[in-house]
Image 1 (tube, helix red, strand yellow):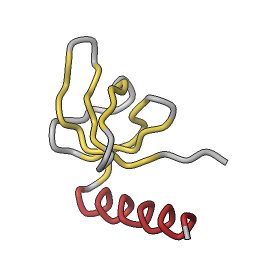
Image 2 (cartoon, rainbow, N blue to C red; image 1 turned 90 degrees about the vertical axis):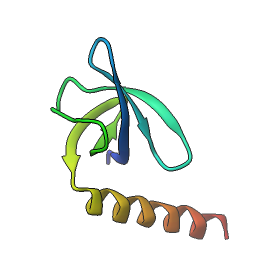
Image 3 (tube, rainbow, N blue to C red; image 1 turned 180 degrees about the horizontal axis):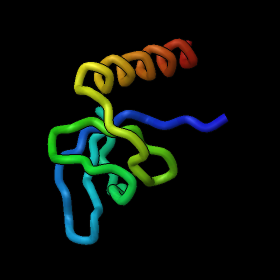
Length: 74
């Protein structure tokens, strides 16, 4: 099974590279597969943005991931 993580695009750099924010972590990812703009949410898998999400979907999914990780730590 593969997991894609929602992230917000903070910046688009030369070479179609985006700086994204996962909530507590920022990372550069490739934007070759989607037409994303700053402020939009994308799903990221193995360093590539693979799909755009609405802001609502991105924030909701991020919260679900946070809850799952918190439960695993208990």
